[in-house]
Amino acid sequence: MPARAYVILLLAQLAIGAAAIFARLALTGSGPLMASTLRLCLATILIVSYRSFKKRLEAVSHRHEMLFACAGLCLALHFACWIASLQFTSVAISTLLVCTSPIWTALWDLTVGREKPKMQFFLSFTLGACGVYLIAFAPGGGTAVAVTSTSSSQALLGDALAASGGLAIAAYLIAVRRVSNTYTTSTIVVRTYAWASAALILLTLVSGEHLPTGPLSWGGILAMALISQLLGHTAINQSLRWLSPSTVAMTTLLEPVLAAISAAVLFHEALTGQALCGSALVLIALYGILRGERKAGSEKQE
Image (cartoon, one colour):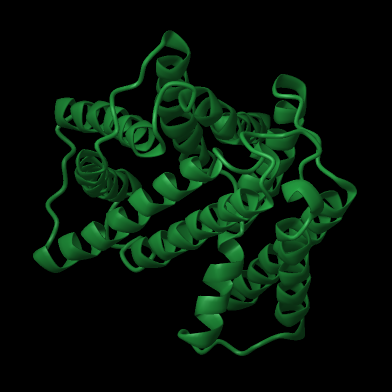
């Protein structure tokens, strides 16, 4: 196992974990829909241009194109909900709740995929639910330093938006894994990014949000597109050449931790004791879910 595999994976998580910081900067002069649209459009244009230059565009059937369109809509909702949540709740809580997608995908496999339920899943799900409850109903919205408002109802809205973003990305993952063995990763990314960009453009036009104002806002958007979207996700795909998907998935637990540390340093955001306790329960639940999926994958290979 080359050492660079772990270095690449760590850098990828740093790039993705910084997305919330970049998004907070973007929101200083832009609305959440506009920031989401520009982030994804810039990334899509660069990826499509590169693939066209390399002449690696792959043909897609009509049925699968509709699947990519649905997945793209879920991806658009993910970005719109998550970035909007940063207006009302802390970076740490928002990133933590949006990273709960493994819980939703596991629940889907259990109910729709009819996989055999295991006690570990129920324990992890219960822990996660208790953790989310503690976060959502923590005094002051769970943060000891005001974000944009001290209103607990607005903090609860932010938590709900972040959780919705996690649910949306889970739906995206469930959709694209149906064709993960049919098309290359780059083809899936190009198609879903393009559809997500189209959906976000329409939503932004309807909302009437203006273009970003100020270099700080534009800098945040460019950083999200180039660092978090292109470099971060590309590095994740690169690390899969050497590491198993379950191992890569485990490292997503670093994202909320890195985001919390960065927010504490840059924005002086401090979580209350109750929110910290809830965050710990959610992280334990995510670890339990991911460990269970890793064990199940190993048993299938045997």
